Image: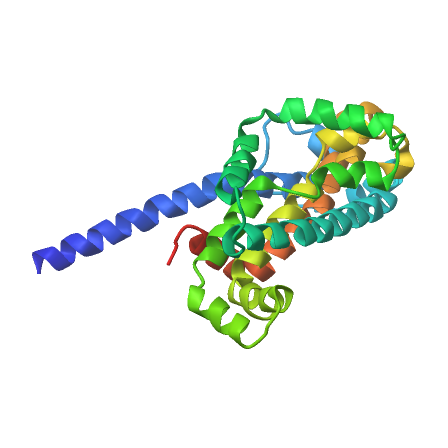
Length: 280
């Protein structure tokens, strides 16, 4: 009886701390949405911040789209995200398969070299990529935005670990039946590792959607700005500093696609992450 009460108390304590932590994490999002629903006059008249609004308004969302061409930036971001993610998957899946299943001389040494690339600071990579793109006259182009992001050593490593968890007997049986490596990869390995593949796609989409430094560096033409650049443009032209509610409205609009994406695929994300942490 005492052990049961102790277990119940421990569970209640865990849930209490989880609820507190959830409130701490979600509060900035709540404040962002709340501010976006306050009128400009109401927000400026608050000497003490209010945690509710009596008269919510959607006027700020209209103002945000009028301040900058957010629709154009959304389209640019969509093109950048879809193209970058698709090309990256075409690169990392065969690479992970090669390291996981194909036997060739120096495989382990090459893979170790790949992993060592993760130790290079991002700033050095950005400098090298910038010089390359400028030399190729690709500034203010979709290719200039996309090409530096079409591979990831970490995602190759994550997929390789998942591919290696598939029994060798399946591969050997497929080869006996005359199945090509490409067919085995598409028909067997990818479906088995679908949670991890979906997780990588979603993480890459989030990464592309939130990308700021590289697009900011490689584009100065507003026709190629992404949504992250659009937010910065709102701040730089003074509109965001003067009208914080409209600024928050723009941030809400930009955040909604990622939130919806996570809510739809949250189970697959959790399954992919947990599968990536185990082997065998």
